[in-house]
Amino acid sequence: MIAKLPAKRRDSRSSFKDLINYCLGVTGHAKNSVLYVGTKNLNSPPEKAYLEMEGLSYENVKCKNPVLHFILSWRAEESPTNEQVDEAVEIALRELDLQDCQALWALQADTDNLHVHVAVNRILPETFRAIRPAGGWTKKALERAARKIEITQGWDVERTGRYEVDESGNIFERETNARKTPEISQKARDIEAHTGIESLERQAKRELATILETAASWDELHVKLASKGFLFERKGNGAVLKKGDRAVKLSQVSRESSFKKLEARLGDYQERKLEVKLQMSVKPNQDEIQSSPRPVGRKSMWEEYRAEREIYIRSKNRAIRELKARQKQERENLYWVQKSRRTEIFSENWKGRGGELNQIRSIFAFASQRERLALREHQGEEILELKSHYLKRFPSFKDWLADQSRDDMYQVYRYPGQLLLSPEQSGVRNSALQRIADLRDYSARRGAGSSVLYCKAGTYTADFSDMGRRIVLNKRKLTEESVAAALQLANQKWGATEITGNAEYKELCISAAVKYGLKLSNPDLAAEVERRRQAQRQFQWPITAEEISRLKLADKPKIYINPRTDKQQYKGRIVHVDEKRGICVQLVGQHSLIVHRLDRLEMPPLPGETVKIAYSEEGQRARIQREEERRRTRSL
Image (cartoon, rainbow, N blue to C red; front, side, top):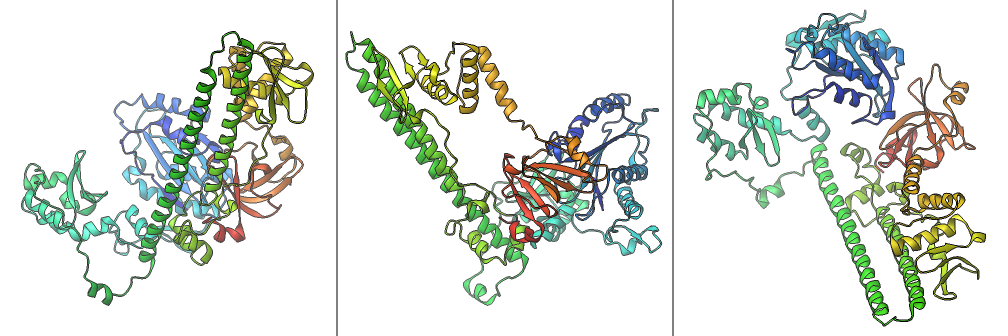
């Protein structure tokens, strides 16, 4: 288990509302990635807990930051129960001396590791006194709490850090001499561990610490820093050392050379003079290149990965940019062609031929709308075709390294554009959707007087007639398709369309407007169309939580009928599949049952198999990664 304090906000502010919304998945995390929520010393529901915490914090005006946020994270193979989560949080609060304070915690499953975010109000409810967590030794207390939780709940004990656990389960602190003080920050160590390259912080410590500590003047400091490729820049109340677009704090380079200590030694700060130039890196000559061995290991792989990713992204963006420019030109060309036709037709003298003019207007609008719909559909298929040739996202460095044994995928990453990925690999479906019936399925012919009749292909009776200032539908052939086609023609001629007729006809118009994305100008009908569009976005599940509970798929289950899907991932065993109802149930952890729609999954899962279901950014499609195929699939 890992227990840690997240990085503080950059603006140095704190907010109970922001933190609790983050814990509950309202912001930052998806709402349905939250598997369980617990509270302590709070009377309000979780979503309103911040109001109660803020109200209590106002009783102590001296405390500038009453908010405390920490995280407890279990290993990937560990799945705590709700009771174990409560117990773990309680142990941590006791170690921090915050057991009497208000607290809210939320168990989340949006990563490979189940973890709980804990929000605490440091103000005591009875005395209004601000508690200093563990007397100021917050990190030590959290690490000690993690060891106690591991022992109490039987998890594997982490062997790193300042605390050890003996065979009897006793926790003791390592000797000071046995602990090696980290040379660089955790963030810099992570960079080196993941990439194999030296971090900027370590480089600055090695090359600049002596310069900062021995410089006799600001001018000397600027010159010597520039000779190493660094610039000294003010930031807020302190300063940073910049190299390119990266920066490192002065305190991270040398604690003896903070900005205040430099000013105390060198006097008031002086800006760098214009003649001070950065020392550019010198390229080795050809003999040095030939004699030096080619670097191997993770560092060279990192450099290779960055180069491939840059080439790939540049190639993909260029292809998309060129396609959009061409499609924009096609739309403009169609606009000007239609405009020239319109000018040519209506430039004639139509005096005394009003009926014929109405017919021409209707037929011209019909033809123009058909051309626009066809072009829109064609361009949509072109975009899908292009997207299917590229990965939706270039893999992370970790996934890329794990997949280097795959020659086929390696060649795609190495030479983007030369090998094409299938739509299943890229996460974009390339199959053309079956087109719904619309105005393109109709033909136009002149009718009696000034009317224009619109007939479906293969029929001779008009579904609707354009009378010039109004469009009349045939009552005997009144369907959603005919109403939609008539509304498409009306939208092309007049924009939003006013509807007159009985309740049954208005209901058809509303249904067609919702399905085809059309506009109605009647205020009441337009409001109903918008309401139904909003309701459509909320899928009505064909099974209830009570029915799933009766299946007895888990002990004391937490059932999530309609989970959050946008960019969410759920890992667990498939415990139930109901093809008739179009759903499957996945067990995440020991008690959480997540219900998925089968029509959103790229393939139906099998009962009993352990899978990772990863939803797309828009949440409409999900990819399935089986446990035995995970290494091979992760980079796709």
